[in-house]
Image (cartoon, rainbow, N blue to C red; front, side, top):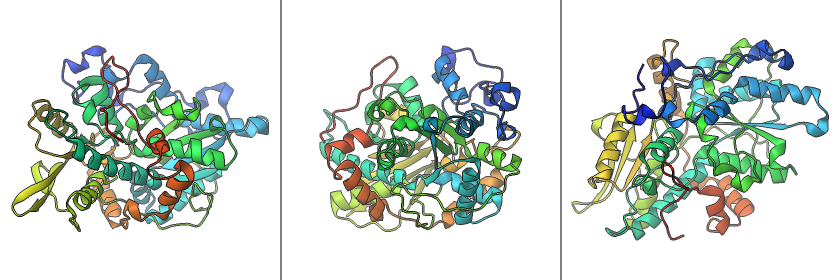
Length: 456
């Protein structure tokens, strides 16, 4: 089966398996490993499939394939079992961070409200031996806020001689991997340098939280629960460990579907529990989301911020106009018949290809494009929205979309927790530490990491 996401030329780097959509990356069950048996071994049979969104095997080296294969339930339970066996001085503190787009999946599968599903999930993980469970919404707040500021900077610095626009979002790891490994220059300079929510969360857990707990980064085993398999590849990004003394920001990524398999196979007694906060305050907050139908909502939040900062225009509801299809839409800010801002959302590889082609030809009419690899957005990630036959589970997707839409929206600017973290963790919203902790650089094929010189 040919990978639908790549052209023949792009896929020629490797010989594909007969069925890459269902090719296992070779994660044996702990039940088959006599050296790792323990009371959790029967839960660790979740199969790892590289049926991800964009990162087909032309983008995955042999070494990365091995590293991805290690990010599975077996590795997770290995750490849990070692904590039960080894000397306490060698124990790992297990921290799990849950993506906001995973919560509607758990709510649908468990037939619970989003808040109750998050408490059930947290209780289950802690019954296994996990010490802390975090909601990743705070990391998405940081990613959106930094994207907002970067867009305004790029807008002011943009010129025909030095084009800084359009700015392309960088929260989707499948899209970023494709841009770096296949497209390269002139696409990568247009990628927003703000780290993705997963990368930000890794910095928060391995840096801020570790210091508050008097732990070194390598004493924490950090697990991400995410909707798609591309998050496993994102955990391998080379620049992520640099600020963490060589410790990876995410040690293991498990999809929502893998966690549900564990829950379904478990006979442990579970007591619901509230999610933890990075500051240690155990006060439970209502689950919130950002302004988007299926993802972290960079477009809507950046659009409102830019309209206010650049043109002193207050935008309430963001109105989308469908272009080529339902996954390619635009938003404009107009005044006196003049278009001041033109933003677009491009989801799925066909729309992504159209954006890239027009950008290369200098005919892309947008200031900002929110790019996501999965048609339908992050809720559609194959780690949670795929039926047994490999196709999208349409009924489940509709259910998740309804659940997600019902979650109250919170603007990142209104989060007192984020403002406190800017001060306590980074020394202010405009400090040099912000660039180090919340931004990244990109590389093209065979090139060192680099980014456009944005004046900070």
